[in-house]
Image (tube, rainbow, N blue to C red):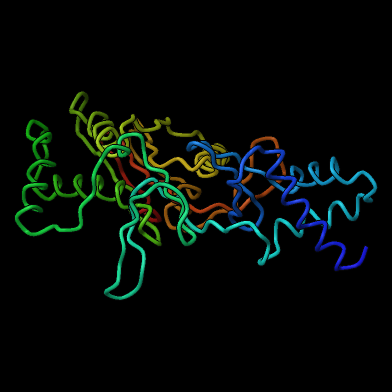
Length: 289
C-alpha cells in the first residue's frame, strides 16, 4: 500500500469512526488518545480501538496496514479531527496580552473543551468586577468559616486559597500546592473543611483515600486518580509523619507516566488534580515541604 492509498484509507477510516461511534464529536487528545464527547460523557479510544474499526471496514487490509492506518489516525498532526489541548470544567480566559475572552459556552473552542460542572450550568458569569464586588464576594466566602477554630487569620486565608485553587486549577499551567488541614485533636472540623470546599466549588464531595501502606500502593492509587482526571483528592486521617517519594513526585510534576493496575501499558497524563491532607500532629517530609 503506497502513501497516497494510506492517506485515502485514513480519511475514510475517520468517517467510519464517526459512524461507529454515532457522533460527530470526535477529537484528538494527547499523543495516543481520541475521545468522543456526547452530552458531557467522555469515551476514550486508543490505537487498538481504532484498529478494530479499520479492520471491520476494510477486510482485505493486512494487519501491518491496519496498524499503519490506526497509527496515522492517532499521531498525524494534519488529520481531520480537532485537537483538544485542555479539558476544563470552569470558565477560562483565552487570548494574549490585553485581549482576553472568557469562555462560558460549553463545547469546543480553539483547542479548549469546556464542559461545566453540574453546579455551574445555570450560573451567569460577568467580567465587570470591581473592588466593591470583590470585597462582597470575599465576605460571602468567609461567612461559612465563622465557627471553625482557625489558629490565625493567615490559616483562614490559606483555606480560602485552597477554594480558589480548586476553582482556578484549569487555568493554571503549572503545579499547585498541596493543602494541609492540621489539627491537635479529634472532631475539630478538618474533614468538614475539605468537604465544604469541594461542595462549594464542584457541588459534590471530594474523593477520600486513607494513607497507603508503601510507595507501591501510593503509585497505584495516585496513577488511578490522575488517569481518571480526578479534580480533588483528600488523603484523610493522617497521624504523624507523611513520607512518600511517589506523593512528593506527583505534587511537583506537571505530567506523569501512569500505569494501570495489572497492566504494563504506560500512558502519559497531565497532573491536574488538587490534593489536600487531613490529620492530627502531621509532620511533613523534607521533600514535601
